[in-house]
Image (tube, rainbow, N blue to C red; front, top):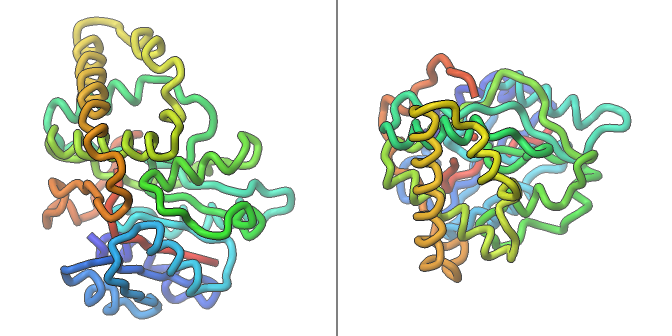
Length: 284
């Protein structure tokens, strides 16, 4: 997966104004070897499988601003990264941002596609930096925290640092998030997200009024089936997450269903955010 991610960032690798840092946190595969083949990439390795720890290592390896924190299985174009950096560098800029994003469900099972169809119909509430597998911060925004804490839902924690007027989503070529291919894999991801909210002693940032909003999207049998699938998976994730609370970031429920050769190839994108252990930090 790391090759696909770095291929999207190729125009940045030759830039003297951008540092691209791949942090391999507890990797037992060839991620570091593959990343080192790319000229212009700094590869750091740690035996500790902590995602926040990996981001802190990446932070310590650069002095450039702004910074983008990117899950290593997210395909994003260099132009989208540059657009976010420009947004965070302009006068009176927001403190945090991310590019547009979509979920690619074409290779997913019917229940997974149904879940994401229902989710896509629910109106967005405010600017949501979480859930897309990448987010960026300016130097001023980074003053809000000394480092990433050991929490599972790092994106929700990060999003909560900034008021509505301090963050933005830049309209770009969308970053592509590969949906889990199986229902079991999706349930793992949803359970991890739910566990993250419990650890933060908060609720899902978009959960308020979501049930009522979901009911309002039903316009017939197909959309009703989507809503039913969404509700069932959300309820199952809530139950399963209770068994995971207290496991910390050392346990990372990742989606193994998309770790295949065909999934690693960029493709044309449908319209309309999951995530794994390796992180890529890009800083300007």
